[in-house]
Picture 1: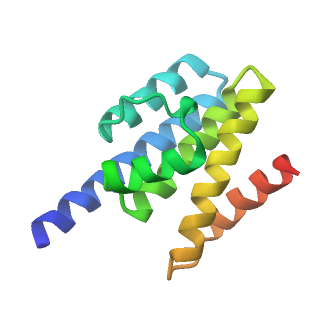
Picture 2: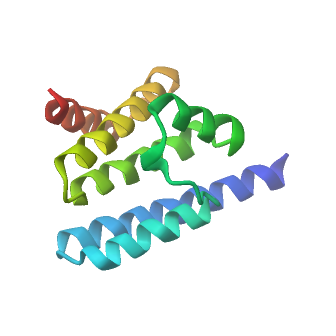
Length: 131
């Protein structure tokens, strides 16, 4: 049990670091490098399915039951979806990414026993955009 928990903590830290790199590249206008980091994020989670083609329900089932991701993983995944939405060239794709990110973050927020200001800020940003 301890080894598994240590592995999950290391993986979460690695994924958090990748998200930090994505944000840094986006702030500097380096979209190509941000996209490379997004691909690396998906590779770390062994996700080779095109999430754009999945409905919100299919995506949640895929992440929870097929990939067996924890709520912490799903939260980080939602952060990446939000960044993909920010980078999407077409409005339709942007809205799709934002809806999926909002749904996943809202699910995590409802189930979490830990309050996260960052999660609340992201939910607020997404809600504002979607309304």
